[in-house]
Image (cartoon, rainbow, N blue to C red; front, side):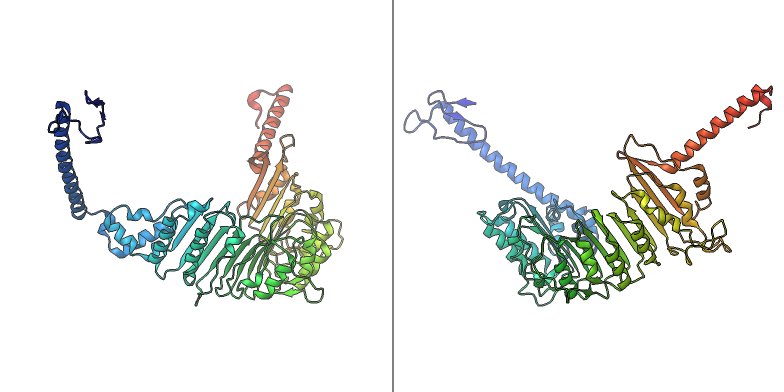
Length: 546
C-alpha cells in the first residue's frame, strides 16, 4: 500500500480515488497526488477499453454459438423440448430445471416455452424463511405460469414449523398460490404440520386431474391431535397415502380411489372408508384400536367390499380379530398380515376366509404367532393359493410340522392305511418362502414335491421357487442340508429355483453350496480312509481304484 507523504492517506488498488486529493495551494496538488490523479485517469480509460473488449467477446461468443451450434441446438425444437422434459422429470430433489436456462439464450428460450419442463415442482425446507422468501414465492408464481395447463406434480415438504413462526404468513401465501392451480394437480405429495395441511383446498376446482395424493403430518405422534384432511371434496384421486391418525375422512372424495395406504388407522375409520370407497382395489392399513372417533355398532359395522383384491394389514394388539370379524372381501386375491408377536386368532380368521373368497392366490404371514391347528385350518380354506410366505418371528418352528406332514397325507401310507386327506393340500402352489430364527427342517422340502396320485407320479404341485433363510447367531451351528435331501431335490433343480441361505449376524451364505462342500469333504475323507485300509491289508497303492 502507498500513502501520500504529506497527508498520510492510504490508497487501495481497487479504488481510483478513495479520498480528496491534497493540495499544496488552492490551485495545485502535491506532486504525488498529481501523479495519482494522472494514473487514475489512465486506469479509467483502460478499464473502459477493457470493458469494450469484453463486450465484443460476448458478441463473438453469441455468433460462435450460432456458427457452431451444440447437438441440442441442431435438433428440432420439439425433440429438444422432449429431452428437457425427460431431464426435468428425473432430476433429484436438490436440483432444478432452472439450470437449463442458465446455459445459453437458446436453451433458456426452449425451456421457458416448454410447459412440461415445469410440471414438477419440488420444495423441501426445515424453516419458513428458507422456503418462503419473497423471491421463492415469485419463483413459484413464475414456475406455475410457465407450466400453463400441464398436469402438475407437486412435492412440498416443510419441517420444524410452528404456528407462531414469524414467516408463517408467507408459507400460507405459498399454499394459496398452489391452491390456485388445483385444476391441474396430477400428483400432490405433502409433508408438513397439520395446520398447514388443513390450509390446502380445492374450492376453485372445476375439473379434477388429480391421480395421486400423499399427505404426512410432520407433527403427528401418539400424543398429537388427529390429522385433519384438508377440504378436497372436488378432486377425486385414484391413489391416496395418508401418514398420520385420520380425523375427518368425509373431507376427501373417495369415489375414484383404487389404492389406499392409511398409517396408522382405527378400525372404525377403515370401515367408514370402505363404505365410501366403492372402487377400492388395494389397501394397506396399520391398525390402532387406541384411536377411535366413530362408535362401532355391532349391528351396522360389518362391511362387504366386492372389489378389494389386495390387503396389507399390520397390527400390534387384539384389533386384528375385531377387524376380520367385521369385513368380507369376496374378490380378495392377495393378503399380507404383519405384526410384532401378534397372535392370529384362528376362529375369527377362519370365519373371515369362509365368508370371503376361497380364491386367495397370495398369502404372507409376517411375525404372527399361531397354533398348528389354526395354520392348517387356514391352509385348507385357501385351496387356490399360489404363493405362501412365512416369517416366523417368535413362533416355534415346530408349529409348522403338521403342515409339512400334511403335504403328502393325500397319498397312501407305507403300511397300507388309507390316506388322511382326500385331496392334496395347496395343489396350485408355485412359490414357498420361509424365514426364521431357527434351523429349517430340510426333510420337509421333498414333501412339497409329492405326486398328486400314487398311480401317476408325473402330476404334482407346479412349484417354481422355494426360498429358505435361517437367521442365526454366531454361536449357532450351521443347519446343513443332508445328502439325502440334496439328492432328492436335485431331480427338480432344472425346474425349480432353490434359494437356501443362512444369515449369521448379517453375513449371508448359500446353504446349498455350503452343504455340497461339506459332502465333498466327507467323501474325500472316506476315500482316503478306504485307501489306507486296503493298503494296510497288503494291496499296493497302484491297485487301489477309488
